[in-house]
Amino acid sequence: MIPTVPADESGRLDALRNYAIVDTPPEAGFDEIAELAAQICGCPAALVSFVEASRQWIKAKYGLLPAELTECPREISICQVTICNNDILYAPDLINDQRFNTSPLVTGSLCLRFYCGVPLITHDGHALGTLCVVDFEPRELTFEQREALRRLSRQTMVHLELRRQLLRRNEMLLELEDARDRAVAEKAESDRLLLNILPPSIAAELKTRDRVQPRFFDSATVIFIDFAGFTRLVETMEPASVIDQLDLHFTKFDDIMANHRLEKLKTIGDAYLAVGGVPEPNRSHAIDASLAALQVLDHLTRLNRQREKLRLPAWQVRIGINTGPVIAGVVGKHKFTYDIWGNTVNIAQRVEAAGVPGRISIAESTWQHIKTRFEAEARGAVEVKHQGLVNMYYLNRIRPEFSSDSAGTMPNDRFWKANEKAG
Image 1 (cartoon, rainbow, N blue to C red):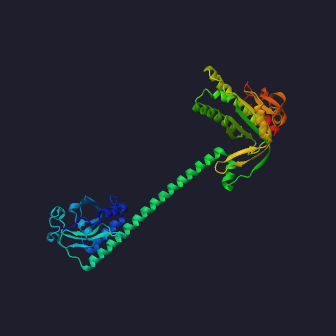
Image 2: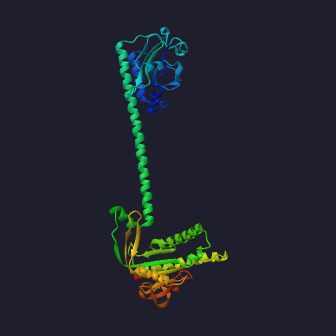
Image 3: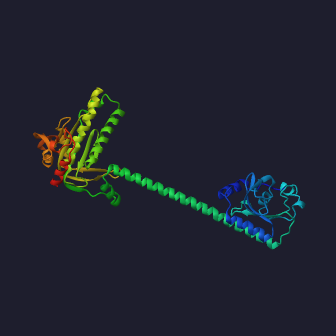
């Protein structure tokens, strides 16, 4: 009985799949090998083919073979016998060879009469397919021709192995490119998240030096915002609704602060802290903070009009502003926080706490920086815990001559020109 299935068939098929050769387009290297095999053996046709579980698939062919011949069923294949022998199969006359004289390849329209094939064997001993020459007449090959065909089969395997390595190399390059793209995307996301919690210059310093040097700023303006009656307000609200409302307000505050060159530092419960003139020093931080405070109140005023129509309680804030020196830096190792310290911060919080809902309280230090452009009413000296008496004012609006709206919340062109003259 002629063996038609190698003993290591499962491993052989796995090895064939590993080379990713079946059903691939023609390649010049394999075509040239088939042509060279036919010329060496003096045969009219030659094939490079691979044997799958149910078929023999032809990768390259040369000579007098039908154009439509690309595969044949494995059960009639002569090459399936070759891969079982793991050695050259030489049949000078197929009609007189009992192994093949009833094969449709011999008795059918193709009329093969001569076959000589060499298995294509991997380093692991798996026969993947064959390099074979065929003729339509009986033929004899010399020993030298058969040995040349054997050597050519080994070169075919070298070519196949190089092809596999090249494919693997390309896959690795794609994997590296994907990994690089992921790394770039992850770095961009990391940078984006870092910029969400740190000012750009501070984030850059942290990435470059792995730490941030604390800095002293001799003049900055701190704005502290706190929702009045927050505990009572949220007692009747669902927790998710509380978070949604705070997120709505704080997101708006973020936009207002960014539009006025203020740096949002943090939120503590229902309190919001921001600073102007830090980390990039400027001379307009007191004016910037005052404009931002007016627009925060304007936002809440418009929002509360809608809430009143729906018979919902109003959201009211107290705002405190103070100007003076601060120290700024980054704290934390696993979760970074850019923060400020100093008496200026403490007074800003005390000024806010000493205010009333819906009003902006400012310390005298801030008023001296903004009094030429804004209107305020004096509150006199107010006792501040741990600070003694602090002169305070209620900031009401931008002066009419510098305002573009009747409420005095938006500056006009004259405001900015006056600001430029002031330096």
